[in-house]
Length: 231
Image 1 (cartoon, rainbow, N blue to C red):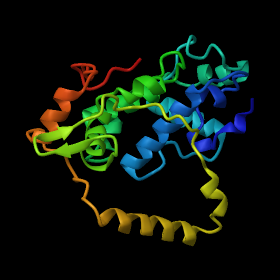
Image 2 (cartoon, one colour):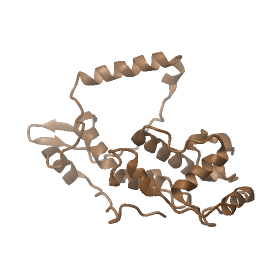
Image 3 (cartoon, one colour):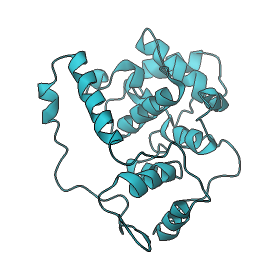
């Protein structure tokens, strides 16, 4: 258990506030930071120190409740409480880019939650409506578990299977320079372009979209009527 378990820019508030115990929820926070960075092409919480990092987080999420700070050390609580009370400013996430849709921002708001008990789990995140389009692209163009026939596309019964072998990162040991990584990525892109191109966007009126939706076992959860609900 250490405060340096995650790079500062992607460090969850419970770590910044000196919690003696943390869970895999810190990884969900990091994924949320990276997701926001992919959308906005900039680091969401870029600070010079851990204290400033915490201040940037509260600027966005607002001043946390005492319940949300229940695992924080006394010094961190004092720092938060002696500062001005901040209101949440989550709507600014819509300004990250034109790709920051309602579904994208809603998923971000479920991952970037101060209170770990209310932060979305990895399992629930995988069922979020934002991932439907990506899942559609994969299973209509890129996967090996579905196949096309003369009468249409035949889909797998499990769109999110659990992998049996553990992820093997041995290939990273052979990477010795940034240039080598760039060359490998470039070669991968060239190989992918030899086959069918992945569509840049999904047409909701297309036959592929309709057949995919009708074959989905678990229907996406309903989105809230308001653009943002801060918990």
